[in-house]
Amino acid sequence: MRDMKFIIFMMMLLSISGCEHKPKTPSSTSDWIAHETTLIHAKVSQLNPTALQLSLTAYSKARQQGLDTQQLLTVIDYSKPSNERRLWVINLKNNTIVLNTWVAHGKNSGGLNATSFSNNARSLKSSLGVFVTENSYIGGHGYSMRIQGLEHGINDNVYNRAVVFHGARYVGADIAKSRGMLGRSWGCMAVGEDAIKPLVDTIKNKTVVVAYYPDPNWLKNSKYINV
Image: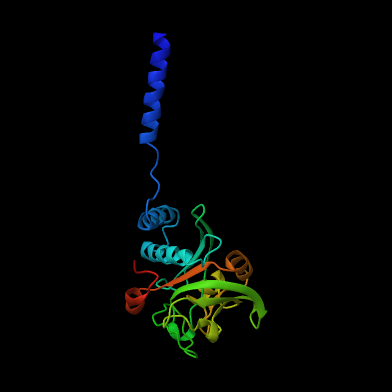
């Protein structure tokens, strides 16, 4: 009888101890953002942690608005030069990188580095901020995908400007290596011809895209990245 009581007592102690050492789960949105930033950056150190954190902040707000259906986040870091892979697709269900590829910026946004952005028609510049993907289609550049800009005065004109994701011969590893920089679009998020179909098929139909650059106006006024 004593042995049985001792066994029960030890089992209770082990149970209590086990509860005390269970990993904590994030208890708020800010905790979740910090938690995800740490986990993802540990797997892909090339992704600027500031760009990642702000993108996760924007994603969480967009998701609250019902603008995400697949728990996928695409981050474009325009603070990186175009000869580096600066587009990431992140699966937030398991914190894995689904895709990492090259992406061009607009002709009038800069040369090797993008430094100027616009929401204006015929600017031939890239737009910053938070977007949601729409459907795929076949257009002048072949297989492509429309997007909607979610930020008034920052990128809400991209649909009317026909800023889309499309494939282009001037984007890819060979171009980045031989020319030292990618070719440039008219503002579209152009990727390599071999990357466009897997990219679009992965992120089309209501997933969040964030195009990052440390632009003072966007950092100050965006309703998606300011808590």
